[in-house]
Image 1 (cartoon, helix red, strand yellow):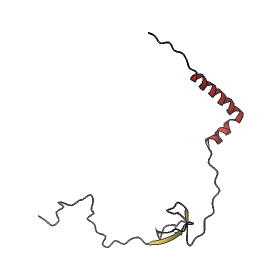
Image 2: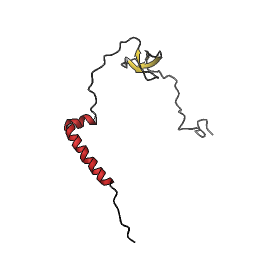
Image 3: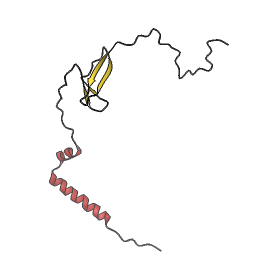
Length: 118
């Protein structure tokens, strides 16, 4: 048999390529400090734009060592269902609708006597 036989090898799990001669991409390491005292080192490509904030493992926002905290952009609060409802109806109209719906529900809940046929 030949030395190059593939018998017994796991083709799906192992690569026959080697890492010889492969150059990794140039990287820079950014250091982030969390308000709770955690320090995180994240490698980035030298071509990447490095963010000023990074989410720490504790969930807080960690700030990059050599940067300033970015300004918070003013955003509109999310419109809720209630806000959209108030755009279409007044409180008085909503109270009338509520009373009508409650009356319908109460009418359906009234016990009715049914006769059994023998």
